[in-house]
Structure formats: C-alpha cells, structure tokens
Length: 429
Ligand code: ATP
Ligand code: MG
Image (tube, rainbow, N blue to C red; front, side, top):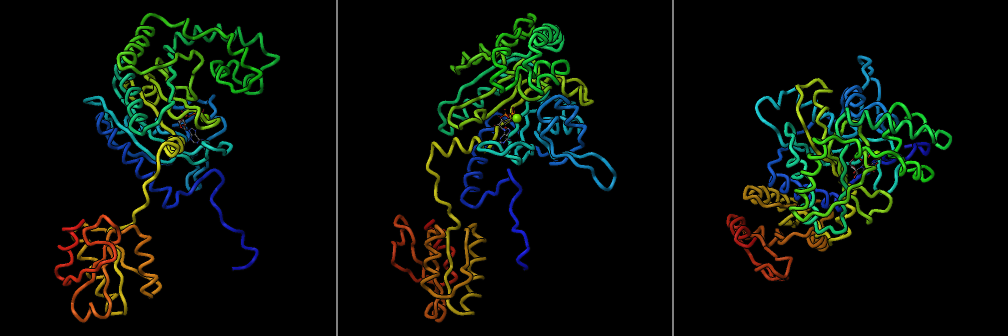
C-alpha cells in the first residue's frame, strides 16, 4: 500500500455498530418484536431502493425530506431516478397496493431497518439511521389511533423509560385544511418582510409547513397564526375526541399541540409525537398519525391507514441512560487444545456439542495454554473444555467451570470421556 492511499472511513453521518453496540441493538430488536407480536403486528420487509417518484408523490414535493434530504441518483443502466428510502410508509403502502394485501382484511404490519436522509449529522441525527415503522392498514376508527399510541406507552414502560411526553393534534380533512389555508396565507402575507427563505418559498405552495419552522425569529408569527383546529368540522372533532377519550381511559397523559403538523404531507386527522428532554436538541423519539388519503394517492383502492415510526438510535440512546447493559456473551463452551491432533479432535467434538444446540468457540491462534485460558475467560463461556496430551491419550476431555455458579466449581476440573461430553455439559447448562 502506498503512503498516498487515503485512509478509508465510513461516510459522514453513517455509523458502524461494533459487537458491544450491536448487542444492545439485538436486545432492543428482540424486545420490539415481542411487544409487536402482543398486538398482532406482523413483520414485512421492503426494498432500500425505490423509484424517486414514490417519495415525491407519497411524502410531498414541498417537504424537508423531498426538497433537500433524499439520496437520489440516476440508474446508469436505464436512466431511471432512484432514491434510498428516507422513511418506510411510502414503500410499505406501495407494497400493500402492489400485492393487494388489503383485498380481504385489514392488516397490522411493521418493519425495521435503515433509512437515509442527507442532514447535518449531530447527536441523534444521522444520514443513515434506523426506524421501526408500524402501520395499521384498512382501519378508520379512533380506536386504532389510540391503540397505536397506547402500544407505544407500553413500550416506554417496558424499557423503563420515564419522562416521555405525548403531544397530539388533529389535521382534519383536506377540505378543512383548504379553508384554513386561505386564512393562513392571508396571515402569513402580513409577515412577508420577516419570512425566511424557506417560509417565502412555502408561503403559497405549502403554508402549513411555514409554521413548522424552528427559526426563533418566526415564533411569534407562528403563534399568532389561525389554528387549523378551529376549522375542523364535527366529524373530525368527534374523531379527535374519540382518541383523547381512549387515552384518558388508559390513564395516558397528553398535551394537545395545535402547531404540530409533522414533517410529511400525507397526514390527516390524528397526528402525534413522543418527545423527551433527555436527548438534547433531537427531542422526538416517535412520530406518527393517520394518512387516509395516501393509499389512493399512490394508486390503490381508497383505504384508511394510521401508523408511526420510532427513531431507533434515539430510543437506544434513551434506553442506555436507564440500564446497565449485560456483558456480551460470545459462547457457552470454549475449547482449548494442544497440538495438531487435539485441535482436530476439538473441532469434531465442538460439532457434536453444536448438534445439541450449544454455542461453542474452538480456540484459534496463539497456542499457549495461558493465552487460551485468558481467551476462554474473556469469552464469557460457562465451561472450558481442555484437550491436552494427557486427555488425548486417555480419550477424555477436562471440563472446567469458568463461573462460580456452575456446578463444576470454579478452578476444579472433571475428566469426561469424549463420547459422554455432550451429555455431561447439557446436564450442567
Ligand atoms: P425531526 O423533526 O427530528 O427531523 P422528523 O419529523 O423528520 O424528525 P420522522 O420523519 O417523523 O422525523 O421520523 C420518525 C423518527 O425518526 C423521528 O421521530 C426521530 O426519532 C427519527 N429520526 C428522524 N430523522 C432522523 C435522523 N436524521 N437521525 C436519527 N433519527 C432520526
Ligand atoms: Mg426531519
């Protein structure tokens, strides 16, 4: 390798999860799968790459994601514009339509995996991050919105997270948003002089989004804006009240935040977010809402839908603040051996143990007994199985308990004939 060779690193904002970190990911994913199963949600998987037009149509042209955050490129084979998914809902809905999943019944589904947004990396904000995405498709009642919110409340409880605050709002239906829009544009026009670049651009194309600004200079203007909530008709209000009543029934506290619009265009009626003050500036852990028009917008037979997404890095960050991670255990049995024949025998014995479902590492590398024992200790295994010269001559293995609670006491060794090894260890684990 020449000295000009530029050191290779991961792309900015895209993280590796090394074994210690990954153990926490896997534990969390397991908790999530069990919790989702309790509510009847089934896993499905969609591609990382989709046609760009799925997102421009599904998420909305005038959104942060579509305007500036997508990783899009042209497929050099056919000139098509493709995009790394910046979120899951559009792809989940596309798959639902394409495979006619709603033809005979509603579906409760979820997926997890990486999504990509070209943002400025900082704590809790990455360019590749992970979402858990949960969708209830084909169901229209406020009971389903409430079920999703109550599910998430149970998850925080299960993970031992406190300080999670729920904010909800209703975005009504599109005719209600139209009436509000006219009033809102009239209001915003009065502030033309102070609107920032984003605000001016969105003034007519998507005025609701102007209120979603984080610019402190615009907060008073946003606070004084006409509220969408005041434009909602009876049906929308009843739906919202239905959700609120069910949250109250379950004892889940919430705050109505009339300014919450969420970052995607496709929402209607209920929208909600879970926020915390334990993650610095990136306060939102989970966001979701109803999107009854999206399935038809993407070419499907009209059907209601509601869902949410959890930012998994933010959830892990929070979770790690409230627990001591268990040590990473690589295996149950660590095989130590001396000499070529013993190495070969150890490999065969290990296969026999694996036939019984045991997790076994056969030592490789530095041959000294001392370093082999050090590795065995570091592996977290319950037992070391040792094949030295004596053992090989006798057709036996020495078994040593590596942890105090094992019934082969620490630092004592038992000799066990090769053919009885698996049974001996199975009786002890
Ligand atoms: P934000 O306002 O923080 O940008 P958002 O409204 O863009 O969030 P959603 O599109 O609703 O976020 O995504 C759902 C969740 O995914 C968020 O609540 C958050 O927890 C997480 N998330 C969003 N963007 C990122 C990112 N760049 N890096 C890590 N997590 C993210
Ligand atoms: Mg965002």
